Length: 297
Image (cartoon, one colour):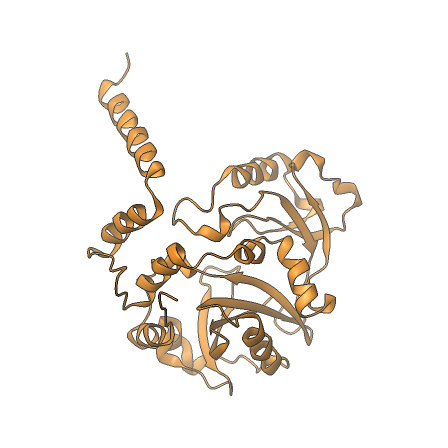
């Protein structure tokens, strides 16, 4: 016998999802913001970093942003702006998983989708469960990355599969992620992300002189005195390029990798955590609130 209570709940959930999906971005974000922070989203006079990111989603829309977040098209953009040597080599791009010719790929490579975040998979051919991999990637291909937080740049990105050359720094035995928060070409610090594939990924902040900013993250407060991260050889170049790439953009996070002394571009992020991050420390929140300046112009 059918569980009528469960059936009714499922139908209700479907109706709610359809209703929310049809809502204009502005009203959808106002509802989501209220649910997350239990306060009204102020779009007329946004004061906080999270509020300002919601404002930018609605009122700062440039076609180039779609190119910048597309993990395949972005490579052409960076090659034109910085040079081919800063682009991680691409081994192929496909519309469908079944079209990938795995026999022509090296033993180890990186597979991900072009239209989302979080689909990156480090693959070793001798260990791949191809049925599971196909199921996982097909699930990502069907996801609409724009919809959950209405991140407009992703709305028109074509879902594809991209495979890149596997890279690993010999000193750290992983890829350290250097994430620079840039405001109209101004950059003051870098968020360093490491232990990415361990149980506790860590985020530590440094200024341009490689002085640790302990109070900018909970990891900095907890681990700051015991962190031994060497200053990257290309730190000054990272800041230089982040400044160039972020000119005339109110805010964008510009990510880099340093692999065995060589600099590579990572990705652009316009809305960290979708603009709904409630885990930042007071010092980081105060800094971000002050740095991101928006205007009707």
